[in-house]
Length: 337
Ligand code: FAD
Ligand code: NAP
Image (cartoon, rainbow, N blue to C red; front, side, top):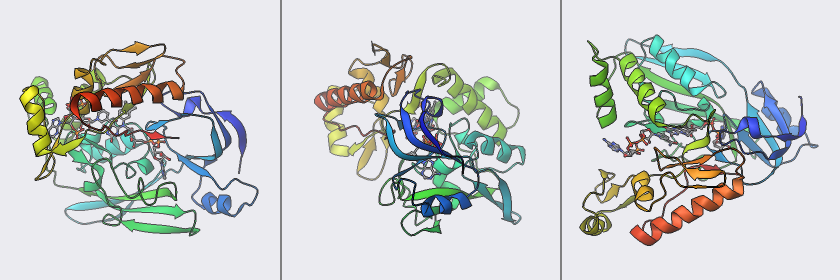
């Protein structure tokens, strides 16, 4: 095991925040998790790190950062309708999406170009354009640091919710996800209800709808709209879209007739957080090297040398102004370390 000490995490987080990790190790094999747990010389505080695309490093990280490099995709089983893939957690999510499409296996094409690793997909049940990872996750295997054993979690065990799972709740920081089994479909069901996908597909003028065409549409939209972390530091949507009661929504609609909303449950409406933030005047805001992206108010950016504390402080100011104006509590989607 190649243990490193006091290394900069700047290359390992898409915000590009420059703080150090006390200890750092690359996880090449799942068996190393047991070695780490059994090594009395290593700190007990362990942080799982994938692509670093959903974290805000607010300060130097004490303890051990375990960087996931577990690779491999195998077919567990298949029948005439489905294929079950076991995917090692360090595989790049978008590569998995492309691999599935090239084999004609459907279910994750709407999730093309989401940065990060497969092992992080269950953590917040990644979602985009009307599809969530939970729809194809059969089970998740993870090393339990306290139980000192690999444990399988069925889809139901994972308690998936909107950008949520048991791994963000009761099992937060207790599990290192080592592999995920996906059940993909040989006969696709297309999800094209989100307006931008429909518009892009029309613009592409394709002869026949396919999972490849949907992924191409998603890639085109995302590339035109979202800041590329290689150019401007960011972690995608900083906040979750809030769900509010129908009564609260109707009250807001009196003052803001144009407020967008989508049904969330029988009694709740989902309001785009980006719209709320934009209404509060934050879109395109910049202070020092922190700011709110000019095309998407839901994305907080680092123009260069912003610190984690500065980004944290800006996110707090945004939350405060949305609360004052709309009576809505925004929740940070990004995991703060
Ligand atoms: P990391 O940032 O490394 O980790 C995120 C959290 O998961 C951390 O708390 C970490 O400890 C934990 N974790 C990571 N791996 C493991 C593991 N193996 N075991 C246990 N815990 C682990 N998200 C969406 O849902 N939908 C989108 O459309 C979307 N678009 C994005 C666009 C951009 C430009 C960016 C920058 C981000 C976007 N995201 C989106 C957020 C992000 O890509 C996802 O949340 C992704 O799953 C994070 O993967 P990661 O490997 O980078 O995780
Ligand atoms: P958008 O199209 O500008 O729409 C704004 C919000 O409205 C979205 O967040 C989406 O909620 C919601 N929405 C739009 N059409 C909807 C419909 N038909 N039914 C239900 N909800 C609808 O969004 P965007 O910012 O460009 O993002 C596009 C997609 O990529 C979204 O699904 C978004 O979640 C995802 N994305 C996520 C991240 C991240 O970091 N988490 C970053 C970029 C993009 P939902 O978010 O619930 O889908």
